Length: 342
View 1 (tube, rainbow, N blue to C red):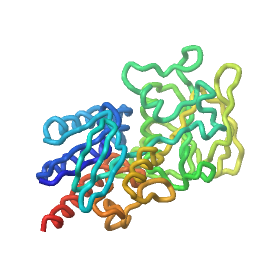
View 2 (view 1 turned 30 degrees about the horizontal axis):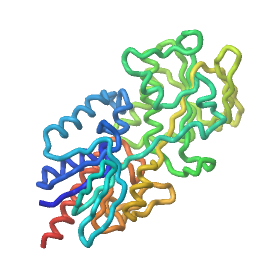
View 3 (view 1 turned 90 degrees about the vertical axis):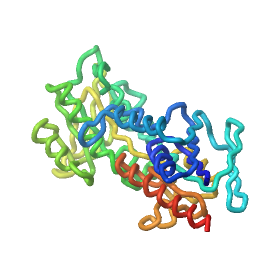
């Protein structure tokens, strides 16, 4: 029986482990956190149909309980040493594992909005990120702002940390636009009297039912979409915010008072991905995401034989894309191990 070590116990890692276990392999998942599931644990509802995130998380946990693969929580990889056609993996828990193949499923990190100082994140109380808002949208959480009042006017800013020369992230993070639409609708359901505005560069509704949700946001919930980027936000004496922007369709400058500013933060390659790449000798793209052999035909195969890639450690992905990429990674690993037996 061949042994595969998967580094990362998020959506991609667990799905890959499940598929490889079904194929008859011995699998060990190394996860740096206490819980598996990764960023999924931080979301309340998922686009485009508002499925509770905990439902998907429970499905992953069910696979962990039912499938015969091992999970090492609170564990990090310290070193990976190739020994001919095997890998020796040393962990923070002083374990030494020998593997026939490795799958990197280290995921992504969210852009740190403090790097966009002009928006006032962590400076002004009424500026939050999409990840912060997701926590506030959980049942029982309060959405009040200054003086305990419900926000009457809310603005979303798209592409924070994506498609941005200043931050060095030139790529699109793929899920920010639809996340903004989803969250705007959720806020409108909770606060039907509130005015909600979305400031965008270009709306990219690439997925199934995404365009329909965008139209519903306008037609049913009266959410306003303004093509333009914010230049700055400043706090007023009453703790509300004055935002300045340009409506690029009309070519006019715009000022607006809002009670809550939501920054839709994009995806970045995380420190764990950089560390795993260094340990394995796997190359990274200029963006920091892991580089595959071929982005079209061999997106799961790294340039190091026996090391495979799964999920958003290679590029920004939606949950659906991550699951599909994980399953294709399992197929590539299985094919590789079959060839090595011959």
